[in-house]
Length: 206
Image (cartoon, rainbow, N blue to C red; front, side, top):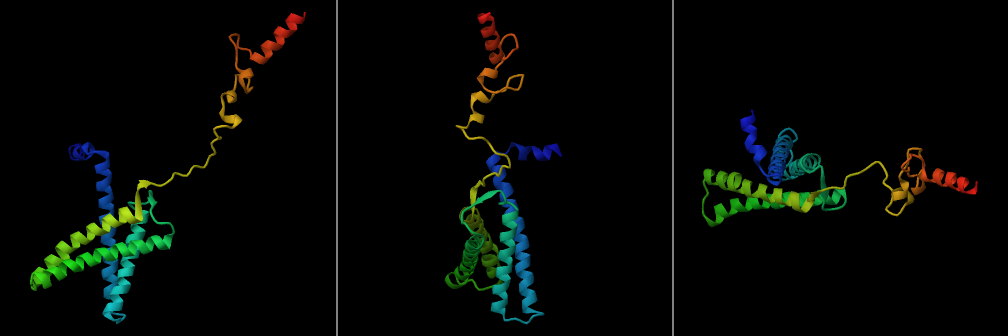
């Protein structure tokens, strides 16, 4: 077990974080693909909806699953590039549409420009090369345009005193008797300076 985890522990922290982010993104993508495919089959079959409408609705469902999974999963501690939940979701939809356009573009180039019209060529260009390039576009857009690369602000429950407030200066140091301020600092004999000055003043008057 230790021998297997040794190469992972030797990886640089940034590379390790990137691999964890990529793995989380891929896991969310699997659930989004299943939601898209399952929704399309259900709308097309039992519901009997038109294929174009069914695909549009299943695409939105898959994007919603992907956005929710990424926001609560690998990017839950990241900042937000776009303010507002619905606007951020709209940018995420555009990013996924761009990835789908890249995937369709690979299929079009294979069929129209290269003249490869066999079923195997369609699988390789659409579900192979196109899927890889489309996923790369989605991953780049998600981490760059939707979620920032820096961590979001950390919320604290306690209050910290201001820099110029009396509670934050050196006079806030408490002595053994609980007195505050520089007069409350103990002297060599253990008594606060305020009491020492009072005793010295009384001795001088006597």
